[in-house]
Amino acid sequence: MKIIPLSEGAFTIDNTKQFIPFNKEEDDLQQRPLGSLLVEIQPFAIITKKDILVIDTGLGFSNPDGSLQIHQNLVDNGINPLDVTKVLMSHLHKDHSGGVSKEDKILQQKFISFPNATYYVNRDEFDSAMAKGKPSYTPAEFEILGESDKVIFTQGNGTIDDYIKYEVTGAHSPFHQVFWIEEDGQKIFFGGDVAPQLQQMKSRFVAKYDYDGKLCMELRQQWWQQGQDEKWTFLFYHDIKTPVVEF
View (cartoon, one colour):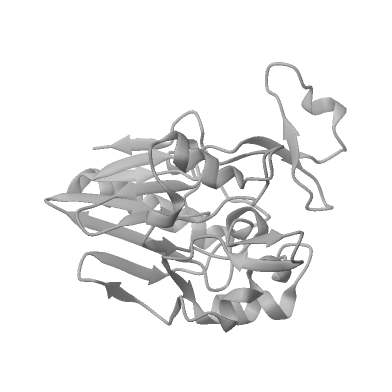
């Protein structure tokens, strides 16, 4: 399998839940509002024998020419967004679901960003996100999923095409799910925001922003040990410096 990180860059976020671009070489975190966190955003593309997968869809920001950033990142890596066959969603917080759809400003209508792909979304996560709304969720960006025939709503744990496994963990959000993709003896693990960064895998870090920070920490420890034992490849959504770790 070929793994392609689709980095969207670094941002700061405060209690307004707005993502403001941050240049690590030029900007000063101390000049941002008190309590601002530095966050890196990084969806992934994975090319398998069966599919071109996208895992989570980023912030949904557009380039100056109007093209979606995640589309341009795919094109820059030789992938036509129309060739994406599956989109796996860990959860629907705005930094993971912004690229689910794209608005045509002339037609004033939103369209699915990957029209030839099947989206896999947890049903309870979708219902919860639609009900809760802002500031953590932006329903306008993903409500189209509820009306689309390109969506499979998952519930509980299961498998997709006999080589992708999904499991509901909760922990970060109530119905957050994670994925294992296994082909030819290689096992890729995407832990979404339960396992977002390499450094968090190596410490007993408990975050206040998680739905259940203690469970997040326990799951990270469990996966990190199991991954070493079973030679997993880890993907980290919020770690641009170390996006992929192989054992």
